[in-house]
Length: 165
Image (cartoon, rainbow, N blue to C red; front, side, top):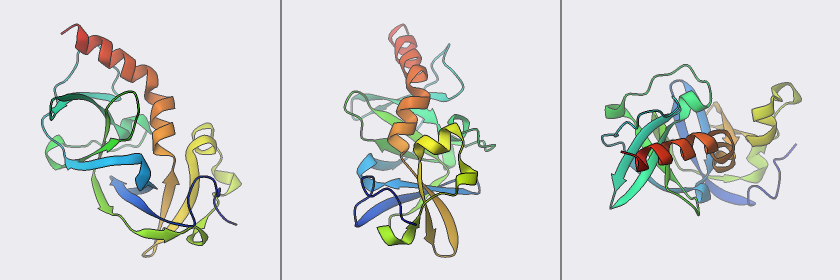
């Protein structure tokens, strides 16, 4: 079985990242840049999934705690985490991850469709495949769609609260 051909090209780069002991990935086309996380300014009255905001070269970027967003039981330390800034036309969004481990080029044939047993409302919409890389199974996600859908209201609340500071 192969992954959705409209989601990933025949051969393309993916960003593999770790959250605690879990490995996930997304197409590199969804990631603008990867940086070491700097000090995050908390914004009062925002959901737990919103870690806060940062000033990145004059642009205010909303920072999401990806483990909390995905209900992964891992607490990220701001001093030892990396930040993936996502491509989004409307706003700057960053997601915290434990680390970005590699950015390999993969063939679509090396990505399997997820099992029907993995179908949950989140997985059905955003899990695009299973990547086999160096003996590990890595979930290939549509990270941008996931963040926009799951955290959309949280981001709006953070921006509104930040505007009132």
